[in-house]
Length: 53
Image 1 (cartoon, helix red, strand yellow):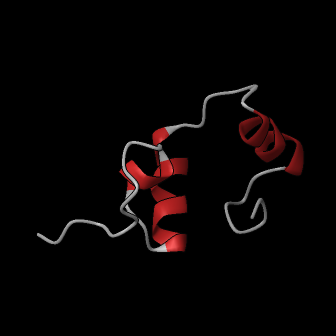
Image 2: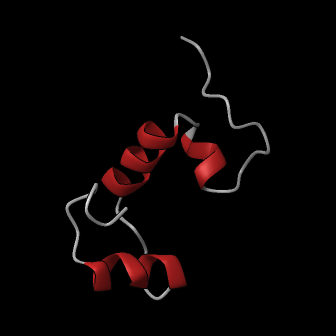
């Protein structure tokens, strides 16, 4: 995943372990990659489907 996001493995690992807060672009890229909503990534909902516009 670090390669896909163009991050050094150490940086990505810090996000995974909760040592650093990921920036907004990181959350957006994860949501796009996994095709889920950002709310799902952030744990605000159990529904992984993004809302339709």
